[in-house]
Image (cartoon, rainbow, N blue to C red; front, top):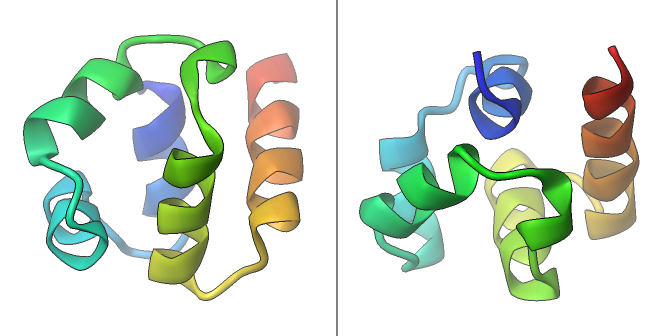
Length: 69
């Protein structure tokens, strides 16, 4: 499972739901999901944070942890 899907699964959120809430296309999230954390922008982190109800710094920290597992 890729990084973004792995993170979202913890909150019961799909990439489709993330796209709807964030206004960033599902295709873009799909592309990003195949790449490493270094490709995520602040805009992406804020969108994820808004969707799961967490501060963006916590999202970044958790994504960093997941990359090390």
